[in-house]
Image 1 (tube, helix red, strand yellow):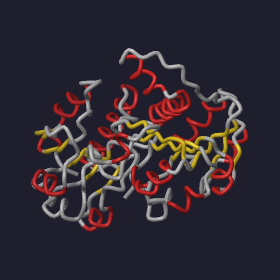
Image 2: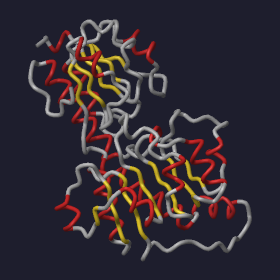
Image 3: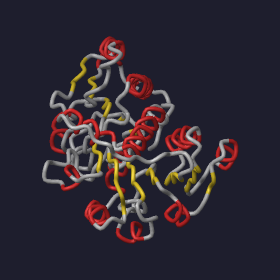
Image 4: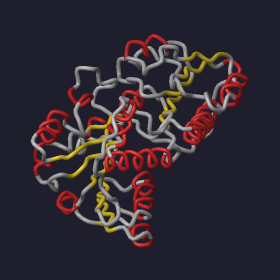
Amino acid sequence: MVELNKCKVLVTPTSYGKSDPRLLSELENQVDEVVYNKTGRPLKSEEVRELLKDCDAFIAGLDTIDRQALETADRLKVITRYGVGFDNVDLVAAKEKGIIVTNTPGANSVSVGELTIALILSLARNIPAAAAATRNGEWPRQNGITLEGKCAGLIGFGAIGKVVGKRLKAFNMRVLAFDAFPDIDFASKNGIEIVSLAEIQKESDFLSLHLPLLPETREIVNIDFLSNVKKGAFIINTSRGELINEKDLINALENGQIRGAALDVFSKEPPGADNPLIGMPGVIVTPHCAAHTDGATNTMGLLALNDCLAVLKGEEPKFRVA
């Protein structure tokens, strides 16, 4: 436990407190100093290392928090991840230094789920291309795909997968889900079928990724996976870019095995103009914005603030992951 009015806190998510300034006021009123990320992007390891030298707490975004970043963090008590994923945090190094790590589970589930639905609709009706053509003075008559009667496969059936599945059922779609530890009761009540990954690949017209990034899920969408997917299916990823081998996806798009893709995340962010996926027809790209809504950012901000202050007060945080 430390005295709050003598604490220094590093805050790096650029959206933190933007829609609810009271979060910033609450933090600033309780601690001695708050340092903000002014780069407009996630920080690199060496940048985090420099800023953490005399900080007691860290409300972190998608910054690289590896062993090198934590070398100078001798005063740090807590890293509070502003979001659900913590694959960018070296949990072993944090534990060695006695640093508690927390996250904000469930806070962005609805927002990420809603963007997933929007991307599925955009793929089905090719909305971005139609809008661009109309702005250019064209008046195209393009054919779309009706969701009713089609099959959606959810790879990962946690909080976000459930949000997506429940809403897709309202379109009268058949919804399949695969998860290592599926919620059978929720699936049964909402008419969602729990099946094998192979069945999802075989049956789904739309495959949506909702997995954490783990050694066993990294590049789960690769050449072998894609070769077994229903020909002409769509891929949607609002989870982690590293779940997809991008070169294999590009090949599958070029040879027609995959009809289209919607990607909110990339293995390298920002992906850069030289990434072939950016300009490929049939591919919709967004800038990792799934969780950037007023509802999600406010909830994540509040959960992060509460756990940050709890640890500094010597209390047990609500959402401890390590």
